[in-house]
Length: 120
Image 1: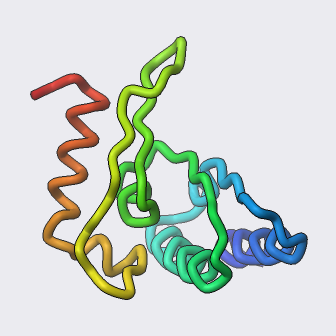
Image 2: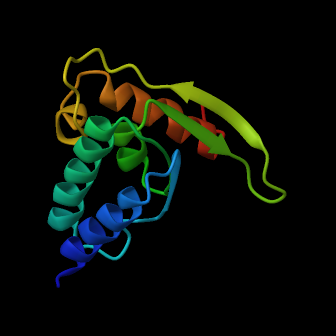
Image 3: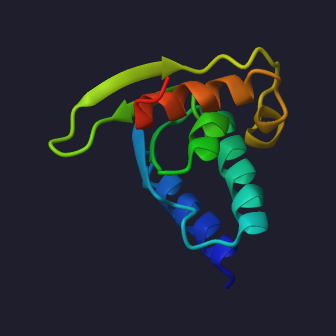
């Protein structure tokens, strides 16, 4: 199986256990960019359709904004919560792919980038 298919299969196996919460720790890091976008969209749709809550750990700002309804920005060690940013892109039937085209996407990217770097 390709990396993308392995990720999809792993999610389906996990969902078969009917968990209340999923922890996705860098689930797309081993995938090439195109596959990452496709799998991200697939997994986002599956989670939405199944009504599941997931915590996505990622260093990819675009991934966090496109998949999440909240982004928790952490500090460096010792790790504490710097900020929790609610993502409201103002689009109906939102998917990770449509999120990336939302006018507010860039604004959220810049807000989170400033939180991470401390630059104004």
